[in-house]
Amino acid sequence: MQDLTPGASKRWAGRAERGTDPRAGFQRPPGLRLRATSGGLTASIAAILVALVAATGLGCGESVVEAKAAPDLSDRPIRVVTTIGMITDIVENLGGPRVEVTGLMGPGIDPHVYKASEGDVIELAEADAVFYGGLHLEAKLAEVFERMRGRVRTFAVTDGIPRSLLLTSAAFAGNYDPHVWFDVTLWMRATEAVRQALTRLDRVHAALYRVNTRRYLARLRELHAYVQRRAALVPRERRVIITAHDAFNYFGRRYGFEVRGLQGISTASEAGTADVRALAEFIVERKIPAVFVESSVSPRALEAVREAVQSRGFDVSIGRQLFSDAMGDPGTPEGTYVGMVRHNIDSIVAGLLGQKPDA
Ligand SMILES: [Zn+2]
Image (tube, helix red, strand yellow):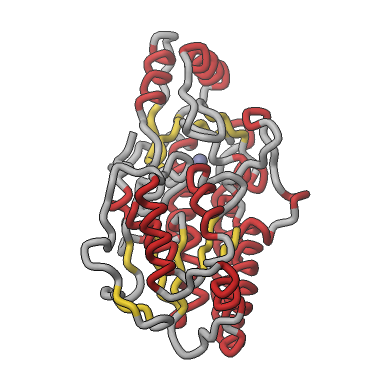
């Protein structure tokens, strides 16, 4: 399992110092800023939240709602909190200098098991808007978002995607698969949803959001074409992506790959020995040259699969790491949505064509 310490995931895309709240002119209580804990929404955090709201002078529910319903955000940056990096990327690109974005989940962070720290709760309480994936992606934050309702505007970016385009999964009875970002055309719809939300928050700058959205969508269209071109290099029968958890079903559907995960849609469930055996047999039978590890999931399970494959007289290489539920480090090409998708398709193609990983 990767480092899940929420404090380690902080990414400050906006101004470095944000101690003052211009809405109410109150100072953030010293010592409360970004204090990382082992996670979990505790009674004490709830108490902090209540105290913060009281400190803004908006203690009564009705006035809070009123203040949030028609905020004048046109003369200062909008404070946005996002969950996964791919959403942070959209909001930063569309909002530009109009937004001050705090992304809760940095490189290597697994959104399925991520819990809010005290610092997160404070960030959320002070935000003008929260953008998250929805479809139970951030399963452990649902309770926190629930508490924010009426105080902070929350937007699930997947609300911009018609339900008819979503995949369901037997592994997740009754729920949609939340990993929509790997079908670039679906992520373009999520982008449009973010544009609409920003426009609703700040109508004065609607034209700016429109221009930025057009530019971002042009890059995503180019990305979509790139993935299609690269995928076409792999012969049909070898187009199988095997990873530790089922993050690539939308990718597979859009770009023509069969997808086998060892762990199911959420990383919360462990793979058993029967799963390992079945997957190993499939690899041997189909002569699949590579399986892939993911940046936010432990590679242990796939190493067990490789051993099982080897014990059957075949070998499978462990291909380059794919970025599934988190982007790469800021400042690297994979630290952007476009870069992570390009990295993934390049790695998948190299692995399935039997080229050795170059790292
Ligand atoms: Zn996932």
